[in-house]
Length: 89
Image (cartoon, rainbow, N blue to C red; front, top):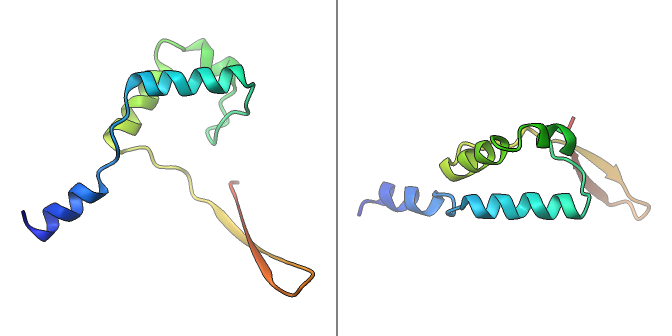
């Protein structure tokens, strides 16, 4: 095994099953959690419930799921230190 092969195997995403995606959906739904960075509400997600979990699983399993960029700002604290705050636009 070459050094390049070792690097590729170490960065490979962990296996994700369709059942894991379904369980995550169920957990979000039962706890009435907020929707994700794609700003798709649960109501709209459920309109295409037969296809949406598969799309999510496919992106996660293939390693092509790329979260959007995050903006960082510095927040000054009372003690003079700075706290990093990250948020999405």
